[in-house]
Image (cartoon, rainbow, N blue to C red):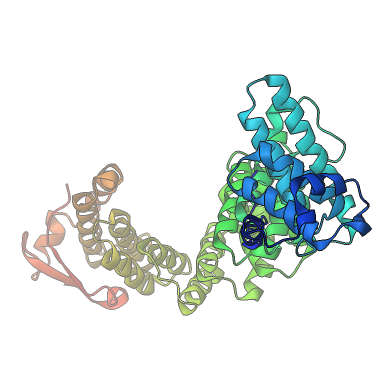
Length: 454
């Protein structure tokens, strides 16, 4: 088992050299040391501790685990905290037996070694506590999780002190949520996903976000976990966000997310209720745009238009569709000239926006209805020339609206001035230009071509 908590030291090498040079007392020969190994801890000398530590460590660091085992067992019995009063010897004994298991040729021997490693793993903290050693519960939870993750499928039975890798990683997270590596966060999420417990996944995601919201790697894991749930079940996202909003009713970010989710689901009625409260929180510009479109669809053109203006003031880059929607709002409010200006803005942003040309043509047709009434004069009929001009342009730039444009062209051509109308106007001659800029139509101020009804 590999652990970032495992430590290396030159003390063992140094003491080994002292032994080789004969600088330690004669009582420290292997025979005398073995004879003294049954003494109580109180009777063990510093020299004995150093010698056994040195002998085991030299073999351990070279992965000669079989040779290291006897001296390490002596250290754990007689000097468990040597040399620094910490947990390094307990960590190493787990790694030692795991290493022996990896090299064992017999399955039974492999299992026996792993069982011994597990025994040390589950009893280490109690033994260290009794010996008064310094250790980290957090680090040992990580070690337990990693051991089970690596060897769990090779052991016959998990002892009471061990659970599942994810369970130990979760305990480590609870102990140090801001320090734990995102890798372990991911392992916890995977385990929850395997169990199919969406509520626990979302609850854990909230905890991670609360503690690690500024950690890009951790948040990617959490965002993927949420999307995995919400992508398959949009209603789950709405339920989750509604629950969040109940906890924090004034949270603008949650309100924005809930509004967006409701709009995407097509639940405009519920979205409208959220929108009214949301607009008081200075939401992001894109959310304001969505609220504006929703208000337009709900038959509230005045509110829609002012909301689009608010979005622009908030820094939103309005699209051709946004300007088109603003034009529609003004048209419904009866402001035909302003509506045309906005449709033209839409065309400035998107020159092949055929629906904007159709909308302008419709404005001219509507102007005739408003100005001419039921009895159209020649001047009223002339405005249909311009309306048809717009429909012609629409299908020229955008084939997708050709059918609509052709239908409107066929309708309004019938209302063009007839031959007699043209004959009685000195300024009308088929094929020549004529400007619509008079009376009720002065705002139009556009030039068209004289032609006869067909």
